[in-house]
Length: 144
Image (tube, rainbow, N blue to C red; front, side, top):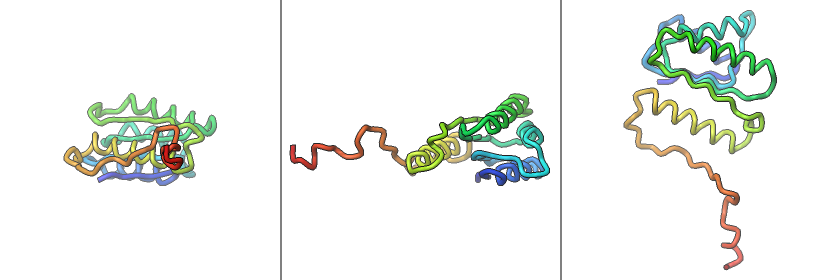
């Protein structure tokens, strides 16, 4: 089971996991932000207390995001449970929207969940991302 949240929902999922002492799952934070009345620092400090593996995925869009990400990373180094993984991924700004960005995010999430939860017996393959220059062979249409 995984808890996930993007933007404000990430902060609420983090707060819920800490307040209810949730364990045995994983927490996915996708570009988290702090809802009022909380500060970025207050939300980041919750990372220290969470007893779940955490994937923290954010986009390099502006200095406020980067500063908040630094707060979270710093708090993760003070975690009580060193056995639970904390992975922070800084995605380039141009990967925020579009099919390629969504596929990469999906691959990261699936890979993280498979490594950090009880999904080691999962047989479903990860989605494929075409990493070549052309999506189809350009010479195939010409009959060469």
